[in-house]
Length: 383
Image (tube, rainbow, N blue to C red):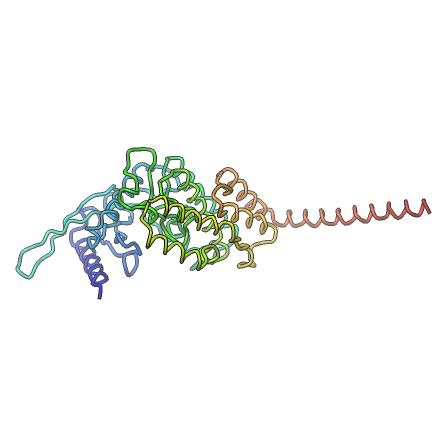
């Protein structure tokens, strides 16, 4: 039986107690876990704490000491701090309060001695919720959801403009700050292509670098070498899958990756030599079959609340961004923003738009009647 859950609770309690007594490095006090497990991350423990330097509440993300021997997880933790420093000051990106730092907590032992426990942490601005909570626990409305999604796309656009690919986009990585500001966070799996950062393959070999499976673009399963453009297009697919989930309240994954595909991928990964030409071609062929055979569902089949006036446009946008063929995917953010803005404009002027639709329909009907009467008159004249 694994002892990790018990150890996790021990470390959480140690951090909370130390913060209550002396504060984390004398600056962050009254740290309390953000939920029962201090977050869902396997390699991190997350708390909210009072920052006596600024007077604000902040989020403290600690590297989970249980994962000290996991090189990839440690590099993820370091990478997040580095990328947040690089993106410092960018709108729609979670703000870094203090880059990766260390603190030492003395743990009293039964012998009377103290054991120094060294921990690493990152301090960031505190969000009161995330988009996943808004969708599944709140009362979402179509217009607000579209505005949120536009801000989410802006965040990814800013990341891409800095030669960064997030690689782990999902609903709960987009945080709601203050009065509805959207900020993207959790950059542990991100890849920076603009500098001397180590390739992911050095610590996390292909094809196991896909990020969250439920939001993975199909071509990522067949990718055996790192490629900036492929990762960029994969991020766009994630946004398409997120858009689908925001309005359908269903994940796109089960409608894309059928049981046969999953079985084939697992078999190839299990028995193949990672990175070999044979494995690469097998993966690519399996992905090509999926792209050929699978058809994306209609977003409005799951939600009757999507207004008719934007239903088809929203459905096209979702299918375009989540296109299974990465070469045909809608990846131009200007086109994406144009479609979103059009939907927002239509909703804001919905009554006028619906009246215009009615008038256009009436005009078309009268025009048809007029043409029909002209034909009848011509037939009568000839007769």
